[in-house]
Image 1 (tube, rainbow, N blue to C red):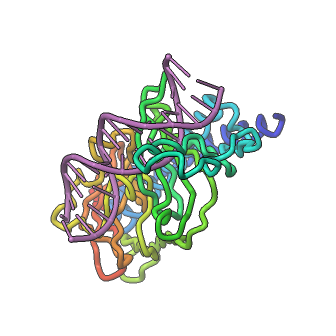
Image 2 (spheres, rainbow, N blue to C red):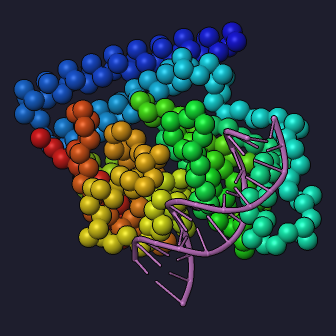
Image 3 (cartoon, chains in turn orange, purple, blue):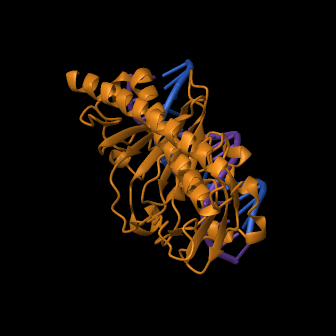
Length: 299
DNA sequence: GTCATTTGACCACA
DNA sequence: TGTGGTCAAATGAC
């Protein structure tokens, strides 16, 4: 508990430092305006502001979690005791009923360890999930979504997870993982931000090394990113489907892989403009070969 | 036609 | 008996 309090104080201090840094950047930006500096300097400042806002958001959200969910002070992942969980449906005799009668007979089959996590966006992990159910929960504002590993049938992977929105503002999602993956579908997300391009310092290169996309609201609500045509990639494509309003993306568009549609060939199929609200980042994403170039708008 | 999602039904557990 | 976890037919997207 003492460590938790110190961690909280460190977070508060970090938040204050970030705010001070933002003030310095703002002052520097104003000076640049007066001195008519070139576009490169301005774009670097824009990107610095973008990063700074992300840092501030992280601090704010973490501090919020500290206040709202004290149990997450040490770590927001909890390992739940599975010893009290009842045995699975494997004890059921397959001969006791017909296939249709066996509907729902696997209730509360958590024999494996469960992991609970709360985050501001639906948790991203390195697995493909398939939604198999959605239930309204008593005394809960939002329904709970049930996912199983996409390789349950072909590889017999028994991993499941439940995702439920627990709070509207700021959005918080609780994800409960049940069981371990036995499938061989580890995905590798790799984002390379490179603003050291010799040709143009304002261009940031983003490269993905994925074989498949994976994100709760991508893998499930978005059937397959490879099916999204370039001309369909308007701004609405980034907003979760209305039928899946329990999911959302970060209130502010980011350069987060989870918000980009990645094709099976590991390239992004977007020519998407970004306009980050609240004076953070304006720019466009331009697809070229396997690299994704971000060009911030200047002025 | 294939695959993923939706949704009503089923049923074990508390 | 109500709640929640899962199934599977229906439906939709491509």
